[in-house]
Length: 198
Length: 198
Image (cartoon, chains in turn blue, purple):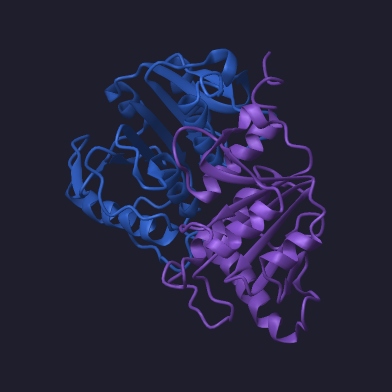
């Protein structure tokens, strides 16, 4: 399984935002693009993937590819799934999840609780200044951690360092999170292109 | 320079569409994501890139990274740039371009005219069943051709074949166009990861 933990620092933890202005809603558009990049293929979804959106270290929305439904490629419909999840959050008690739509679960967990609950194979922090992924690859059962348009907070970075995260870079250019996810998938799909020669 | 030609088969050629339903507007959301994937880096844009959106083989919107302004990561604002271009199309005569916003140009060209006008180094058709890019790489001054959610029409495929396009695959999974663009960029950035070892 490939898992992605995306840290959102400005996105709302309640559903009171407009689908007509996703960048204005704490850049929730960034999170939407990460979700679709993690799951979508041309003719289906990657079922062996999970995504955790950890918002403001207070709310976590988990997308499970094995049971995920209603995920479309556009940002607006993905934002609607997130809004539904944040609506259902009012029913969530502590760290226990509530399923808002098939395959989408919400809880009041922050990063520490998510890392504790994860079945971590290899914790990989995607970072422009990390070690080239081709030297680190192939991660075994990787959990990739990315931040939204901002860096992890010092607290978040401390948790990642404490959990043994290795900083890994995908190339010489610093990429947006969704593009980084697409590249990371491809790197694993092709084993750093090594297994993808004719 | 890296250039991307994206074939849109259902997107509108006039500006009468709603920004609130981009998938309903002939899947114009697909084209928006291809544009942002081609240009955006975390801290700026790739200036040495051009994108041609060839819509219904009748209208072409050209984005030039050297002069491009007002491109944001979200789909809606990119769709607004496209809508502005389609509005300006009423002023375009024949194949002559009109600049609608800085770096965005519209004309009444179809694929044949675009290919004729392109300074083609290597014409590469991204295709799930093509030759692995690592065996074809690195393309010299590549022009990548992608289709939207549908295949090229027989006429379009004939033009591509006639222009010597080589079908190239990025990996074993068929990717959405925007993710394919992100991966193609990364493959060139890292020379198939060969130059990206520590």
